[in-house]
Each structure stands twice: as structure tokens, then as C-alpha cells.
Image 1 (cartoon, one colour):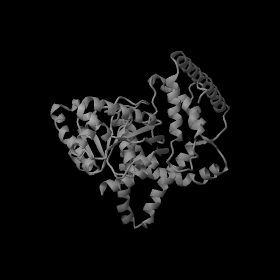
Image 2: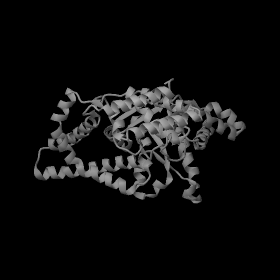
Image 3: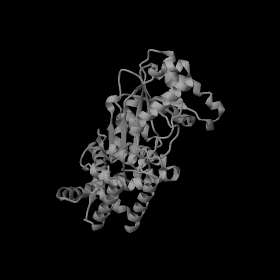
Image 4: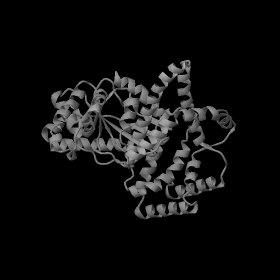
Length: 419
């Protein structure tokens, strides 16, 4: 019950928080069989929120065991299908609890449910798929040992953020073709280690096409410059839905990353140098990069922005306290960028809900009509939509933007002609 309610609430909130949410491969989620969902982990807790809200089948999650240490939080964690898993740094005594938790995990699968595992084992905000940990194979084989006829699959998932620590950015989720764990069972009975390594190797290969993977992380600044052109190519007008079932945008970024990976060392160095000179020429003006992806001001946008300014301002003023409070709390409490967007999202959402609860007795005391509550919420939603339009509008034509785009395109064509 709580899971279903939170799914509706958080799904709506995610559509407000992100500029765009791209999801593809939902047809690979099967309702008639259990699936182990193997995902990368570039952000704190944003990935499980996104998958829980946009997957058609309910999920169970393996999460860091230390979060269960907070007694007041345990009921919420249990009622949202979360299972603790402890790490070496949690202490040897806690590791012994993992046997029971692994049994609980396999029981979830035996009941034809889906279990999400972050197979890299830790959170790291990089554009790379890291080596997989053995836990997913162990849980899969343990479930099959209890029921050899179980039609268990591993579902390879890749989740990619434009920037993991920022508000109003984009996330791209791609679900690949599943792989049957039963196909490895005979080999598992002969050699457990070999079967485990083979299953992990094949899972990694299936996950890789779903992730923006750059071998050399020093290439990320270069990638971030060049990817602007692919994003411009598949740019979606801001008035369109936030949630999009499409993988064109992600596929273009994956293709760019793969092309950069295949360049020889000398070419990579030359490419980095050209990008450095480009930034130097334009004095590292970040606005040029943002402006490149904006839509020029037209009549319809002018009318919308003009007529919508006052209600947007009213909505912002009504919601400024929880928004500022969420930002201050996140800045004070979070040092790792991997957790910034998650905490900002969750804390701001909680603060806003608390504010709405305070509005109710105020409305009763002042004897205002009930529609004022919904009007206040509607003004807040309008302020967010107005912010989307404002931040995606290019208000003046700039020669520098055109020159930057042309120079970037010349580098692109010189070093990545196959793209």
C-alpha cells in the first residue's frame, strides 16, 4: 500500500525535478517470471527511485545495511521492499547477517518478484561501467538451487545522468535483453567459480551497450564538449512531455563515447588540445554551451513568458521556503556529489509536503475556500514549468554561440568523421 502510494507521488515529483526522463526497453520487463535487475550506480539513491516509479512491475532492492541502523527509518525501508546488505567496513559481526539477507533475496525471486542490485557494489559518479561484484550471481544460483525449474533472468540496465548532482537535468535509462540464469546452472554444478565468472562476464557485456562508457576518464571534459552537438541534434522542444520512451538521445551519446574510446593515443591528445584551444578562445564561457541547446525566442514563447510571469512569481514565492530549505540542508549535509541530487530531491519534496499540511489548518482558521489549497499547488507547478521555458529560451542571437557551434562542429568532423 505504502509502496503504491509513494510510487504515484514520487513519479510525479521526478517529472518536476528533471528536465527530461528518457526510458527505453520496458518490453524486456516480464510480468510472468522473476528478474534480477543488474544496474550501474552513478548516483546515490536516485536510480532506485526512478526504476521503482517507471517500471511496470514492483521492485525489491538491496541497499546499504547501515541505513537500517536508524530505528525510525526501518519501517519505511521495510514497507518499500528494501533488503539490507552489509559491507566489510560495516564490521565482521554485521557481515554474518548477510546470509539471512541473501536468503530473503532469493525468496523474493522464488515468489516471482523482481530484485534490483547495483552490481558495481558502490556509488561513483563517472561515465563508465565498473567491474561487477559476485553478489548477483550468488543470489541467482542460490534461488535456482532451491528451485531448479525457476525461470529466472538477469535484466541488464544502464542509467545515465547528464550531471548527477544538479537539478533540472536529464536522465536516460535503457533496459537491455534479459539473460537466463538457468542456462549456467549445469556449469555451476561442475565448477561454481567458473560459472559465476562466466555469468558476470556475459552480464557485463549486456549492460555495456546501455551505459555511456568512457575508458579513460580524463577524456570526459572532451566528451562533454562534443556531446553538445549530439544533444542539439536530438533536442526536444520544452513544451513536450518530460517523460519520453525513446533511446535515440542515449544511443547517440553511447556512440560518441565508443568512438572516442577507439581513437589512438596521438589522436586523443590532439583532440584534447583542440578542445582546450576552443575553450581558451571563448574564455571558457559556460553560457555558450547552455545557449547552444536553447530555442530562440519566438512569438509563442514571448506571449507565454509575458502572461505567465506574475502567476509564476506567485508560485515561486509560495514555495520559496521549502526550496531554499532543501538547498541549504543539502549543501550543509552532503559532501559527495553522488548524493547531492538525491538528497536535494527527497528533502525538498518532504519540506513541500509539510508546508502543504500546514496550509490546511491555516485555510480552516481563515475560512478560505478549499480551492485555494489546489490553487497554491497549481501555482507552484506553473512556476516550475515557467522555469523550464525560461531556462531553455535564447533571448538574443549571439554571434559567439554561432561561432562556438561552428568551431565545435569542425573539431567533430575532423576527429570523428564516422559520426
